[in-house]
Image (cartoon, rainbow over all chains, first blue to last red; front, side, top):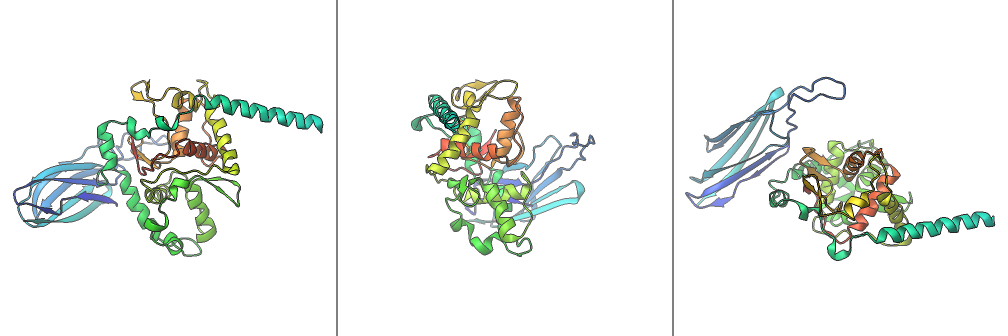
Length: 105
Length: 262
């Protein structure tokens, strides 16, 4: 599962930084009908969590109305050097995770 | 015999006449603008930022596929072509190109599938499949920033002219041709949307309406459907000649793959 993460590598302490995440996922709503006349079962990401050195700084609940390949961007304050982890979980046991490191001076 | 000759020269004159007539509406070099310029600033930023452009996810997939061994030959694209970032640089700017063996235009998708059959001993990938789009966009991305450069030798021009005939041909229940919108009315509105010039320099594009990546051929079929015309099948000769004509028509524009389009 391809993901694209954008976290500034080097920042000043206390600086407000933007974190951008993109993941490839069909986000099938569960409301569409396939060519065989049957409803295509729902297959979406349900939850996204971001932790900064183990502490949760952001989470999002995703719904069927969200387009394919969800892009989630948010802000946080750079407090200390360490790692930022991202986790996406969803239908049919979908799970993906990514990690980015950040240096705070 | 003489009758036949007369018939042919008559047809030749007709072709020349039509070509001249279509040239009248053609977009001049200084007016040629990528469809990018007709988009909102927000969408332009989405395309420009590689960490936001959803087409880049497929570029990543393509990078993986480039290394994957396939077929009876158990060869990867990389085994012959090496590092795509150098070997595939500027290649997409010259496509579709005339294949000397086939004597007809071949687009990037067609070249990738031909390579799979002859060199990898693998089955061709289906049109619009994730894998084919990913490989195509990965190759096309290596030419980002290069100008579309279609040669104007006699053989190529012959197919370009054939493509032009498709472009100016009225068809479908609305009795429209491609040229009527994209040569004569670009910049004006079709309902809420601005009609772009219709250049293929950003393909495969991530189209928000599709929520996925798609090829030029998918876009052309989409347009034909809108014209209430019968869309050409994927890989049809009309498709590749039209693709070639469109590339030539947009020569000089920069490759943007993967572009984002509304």
